[in-house]
Image 1 (cartoon, rainbow, N blue to C red):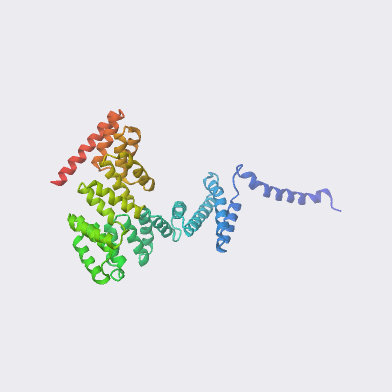
Image 2 (tube, helix red, strand yellow):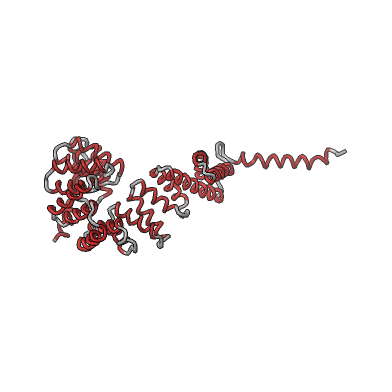
Length: 399
């Protein structure tokens, strides 16, 4: 029969075992998630994703995110644990982004990809996925930098190069788009690429080279509404408004809803002071292409010039909701609000415009006026001085 003393080692072993089970829980702060449980949940989500059970996988991923962020932000986590958690969170956000993209929810996909990039920027294909999500969300200003990073890692990818060229084109970085398309071996055989190249040349001021491109387009692919739009834009850029209007109207007769034709007519009529015709053309453009933020802003400009600022305000607010960094919309909205006596809100928009375009003299002048009306005399004087320096600088450059 065992004696009491012979049972002590067994009892000590039990106590040690109990302590080994209890101490990890006691060591964690109250309410702190278990890293192992967090990683198990993510593993379950990945299994569901491989089995194509997308809704269940998304639910598992989302349920795990709060625990992951708590663990990552905990100051007392070991470095190795924090690294594992950060990597797991990055993969979770990447996969959630892919799920959103597959469902056509591209803005939400881009948000998940952005978060993944802050955690682990070198995840394979992450920058490409981010760029494609922004491209499909029509946020070309954000798509182009992400696609540029992806292209730097895969410079032989011709399809990626073309997507990047289209992103720069849509972001109005005409020179960058033209450079990418200039040596594309498929360009002359693909009318859409040749058209994009010609458009980039026109907008970047290379009209002579553009005319040669358009001549090839006409010879190889025949006349088209889209081609006449670009020809009209090229003529307008050279100041030949009569030829421009003729080409643009021909485009509209060929295809009534062709993109940018009415927008270009609206700008031409605005420059000529034909405000009623400009309004009509711009409204027609927006009926056919309601996502055209530039036409929305131009229409707001026309309405303001026609003495109808109240109608311009909702247009400008809609533009800024979709694109907060649209400087001209910020400026015009601030200017209208200032004229209506809404000084505080006017200052907010004009300050934002000044941050976005610090060299724009007109913005500085309006901001000075706004500060003056708000009784902020010192700031008004500072902005008037900046305005005068910018005017002097521009005058010297023109000599």
